[in-house]
Amino acid sequence: MWQTLRTSWLALLILFLPLAAIQAAETQTVVLDVPGMTCRFCPITVRKALEKVPGVIEAKSDFPSKTATVTFDPARTSVPALVEAVKNAGYEAIPRQGK
Image 1: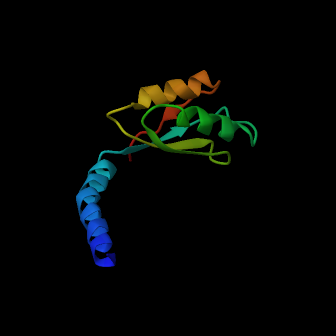
Image 2: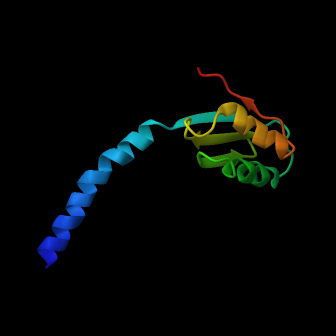
């Protein structure tokens, strides 16, 4: 029985591992400058606004650097949509240009 269970899990892992790799390859990350963050609670508001956007995988915001870093699925959302979400939360967001 344990052999069958172990084989089944291995088969599932082999089937879904390529899907995870494909999904990871399709994500993008953008850093947004959010100069209007003036207190330690502002990053929470910005992060929560970004997390509500469909397609956002992860959103982090940082008060000292006044930035938000967002990992997202470009098939489901876009940088302008992320900027709009921050704007709707009451802040300006400026995408950083690639170096």
